Image (cartoon, rainbow, N blue to C red; front, side):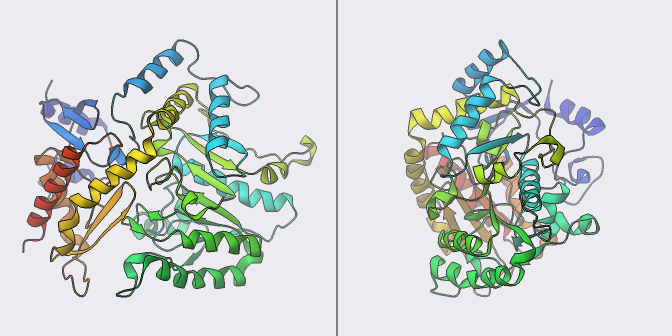
Length: 456
C-alpha cells in the first residue's frame, strides 16, 4: 500500500471537510493543486504516511490532540473500557464513566457550574447552550427573550444555530437565508488597537459597544456568546481578559446569560486550564469539546448552574423538560478517554510545563516580528499566530484569492511539518508534549515558507 493507491481510493468515495475537492484531485489540474496526505500512523507529535514521510503535527490535528498520537495512558484506559462497556443509552440509564467525568468537570471548571450535559461535538454543545438559555427564560415566563448577542469575527461551529451566532463570512454567508437573526457587536480584537495602545486599554475601550447593545436589547436577549481570549477560526485574533470581567458584570446587571465557548481554548491552551480563569469569572454556560478526549473520540459537554437546572425541574405534565438528545450522549469510550486526558493534567503538572513551552515558542518566533510582510505576531499561551500582509506599514492585506497561506502550507508539508493556515495567518497550536527542538523546527519551516509565500 502506498500514498498514491490510498489517494485514488479516497477520491472515489470520500468528501472531505472544509475543502474544495477540486484542489485535491490530480486529474483536475486545479491552479492550487493540493495533494491529499494519507496517514498510516501517528506517534507523539509525529504523523507518518504510507510512503514513510513524517509530519510534525503543529496544529494538534485541528486543535484536539493534547498529549500526542497513540498516547500510552489514554490507549490503556480505552483498552480497559472496551472490556467493560462501550456504550449505553443515557436516557433513563447511567454508567460510572459518564458519572465520574461529570463529577470531574464540575470540580475543575469555574465555580457555579454544577450540572453537566453531554453531546458529541463542539457545534452540538453550542446548540445545547443556546437552546438551554432560551428555554430557561421561557420557563420563567420571559418569552420576549429570543435573541443572542455575538461578537464580530466570532466562530462557534457550523450547525445552523451555531453558525447563526458566528460571524466569519466564509462559513456563514452562503447559509444566511436559513439562519436566525442575531445582534452582532464590534469586538475587542486587539489587532485593531492604536499604535502604543495596550491590549487591556483597547479591550476596555471596545467594551463600550457591548455595554450599549446590552442596555438597548437586554429585554429581548437570552445570552451573549463569546470565545474567551482567542477567536480561533477568526484568524486567531486575541484580546485581554478584562473584557470578560466587564462582560460578566454587564450580563449580571442586565439579566442576560453569558455563554463561554471554550471548545478550542479550554484545557490548557491559553495558559490556564480554562480561559475564563484569567478573568476570574464563571459563565452561565461553558461549552467544551476538542481537547476534552485528548483528540481520541468525539465528545462534548455543556456545564451550567443549579439555577438553570432548577428552571427545568418540574412535573412532567408542565412540559418544561429539556428534550434534547444525541444517540451517543455520554458514550462510555469517549468519557473514559476524557478521564484519562484529565488524569494526565493532574499527574504531570501540564499547565506549568505549558508555560515553559509557551516561552520557547515566544523565543522561536521573535524574528518574525521584524519581517517586512508580518503585521503582527501574537500569542496567548500555547497559541501563536503570525499575520501576513502585503504592506506592513498600512497593514494592507494580500487579496484572499492569492492564497498566500496555502503556499506556506504546501512548503511546510514538503519539509515534514503540518501547518494549516487560516487565510494569511500562520499559526502554531501544537500538542503539549512538543520539545524545544521540534518547536524550533516548526518555526524554521514556517519562516522559510513565508519567505516563499511573499515573493512577487
